[in-house]
Length: 267
Image (cartoon, rainbow, N blue to C red; front, top):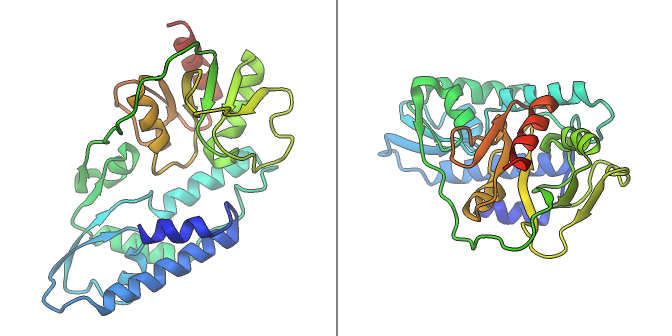
């Protein structure tokens, strides 16, 4: 919760935002470590704090489980590197990487953890037999009504959210796109596509919600769409594989995205 409040005060995107969040996590880890009683022999640790607690020796002699708030840094950065190779013109896909010592500390700590706790299906796969898989919880939301003619993209226009892949398919299929956030990559990014910000609620008029993201740890808007009865097309990186109402596709696979859209439109 505290991290979320700090996050809202920072700029929307960019390397400086990520550096600031990392500094905050390190400071918070030290604050918690200072208040930790010696009698605590087992901990449940947020992944954001894990590398700093491990590096500082706080976890020595203790068992611990990890609440996986995201992918491990090594996997996250590999996904961004691959996306940047596909889209070298992106201003955001290569703007920040965590220092190797933090990545190494996190990797070592995760190897020693007893369990990885997560509802995210892709993260659970990485955990193997250490996984404790939770259920996603759907929010309370009213089903959408009215004519459904648009595809909702429930994120800012960013490479890591799959904006390039959706744009490519939108041009081929002549899709009408509702944008769920700001256009960050380039002001003219959606030129040639019928794309516009949501006029009211972002789900209004949505035939489907599409998020072909390379990285997505907290798919709240996808869960909102499912609760509202709107079909979801999402990359495996969104962690919803096997969830009812979701068509999962591989990251970066525009052919699979096009097939999934054709399936939804044929319903």
